[in-house]
Length: 255
Image (cartoon, rainbow, N blue to C red; front, side, top):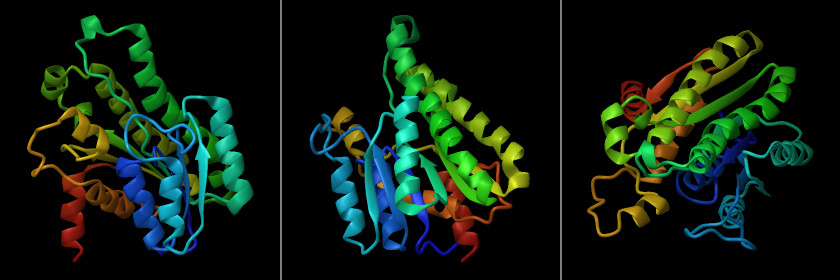
């Protein structure tokens, strides 16, 4: 896939993996629509804002668009899609990266916290997919890449860390990927998922692991490379849920 002049929407693009992916795609010539809740006017607790990512994108000589959005809000997602289409006329690739987490045993997890994780990780993925998908179906072409976690399949780690809501949401995202891929494959839409099975040194992870040795952790840039590879696969390659290690092995085997 030639990234030049493609139009990519990335959720959770103010920092971490989303930011790294936006910059990496821009370096390859893609125009990038970035969305997140942290903005210059209303920054979050962690470093990074939506506008700063877009500045990094446009510095690469391509077009970028910053659209603040809570992806769990249907109206805001509709606005996101409308602005992307108004600006670029189409969307070629949707990267569903935004997610949130909460560490606590299930017996101590409030309904509010459960709903927050589900609303961002699962409802948000559903809303962005459902909103952009009709345009892709009209064109007869499009790519959707969802982001999952090793927690979706590793019950021991999930229980040890106290992240059952997160794990459940990511397992559902994987099932959404596999079933939607079958539904839309005849229409020329590929839907795949990257399962991040290792610790990644994002801003949030660094804050939560203050003082820990992060030398063995993966970088957001390495995950961005895997996401780009998966997003660029032929449209016939769909319904896949691949670990980062799977992608690296396939990249190596392809030379």
